[in-house]
Each structure stands twice: as C-alpha cells, then as structure tokens.
Length: 79
Picture 1 (tube, rainbow, N blue to C red):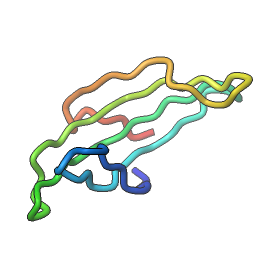
Picture 2 (picture 1 turned 120 degrees about the vertical axis):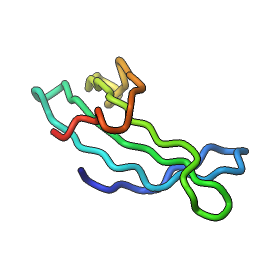
Picture 3 (picture 1 turned 45 degrees about the horizontal axis):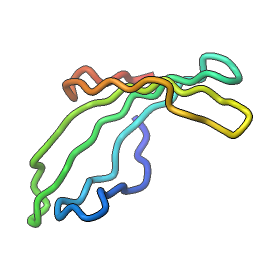
Picture 4 (picture 1 turned 60 degrees about the vertical axis):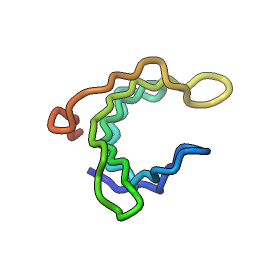
C-alpha cells in the first residue's frame, strides 16, 4: 500500500491518520482504489479503523468516484 496525505473531517475533533491506499488502472478511464483508514483521538490512539474500496471513472471534468464500499480493514485490496 502507498501512503498518501492526511485527510481530516472539517469540524471534527478526531484527526485522521494518513490513509494507506493502492490504485490499479483497469483502463485509461477506469480505476479501482483500495484504502485503509484510521481515525485518532487526541492522544494519537486509533478510535476507528476501516477499509474502503472505490471505483473511479475519468470523465470530461476529471476523475469521479462512481462507487464506494466500506469494509473491514483486513479486507482492503492490495492492488
């Protein structure tokens, strides 16, 4: 998995650890992304840990998520 930048939920006190993700291009306009997320408390301990899988499509205005599935972190795709 590849580490990406940190994402935090605006207005939420719990920060997010940088997500881990992997990307597989299925063709020039279709991609599958597997990611693993951890939300942290104020001491940096994980309070949530989950995986997501996204299907992205490249259109005229750029890449857009077409489908997203939330799942157990151990089921995260390593592409």
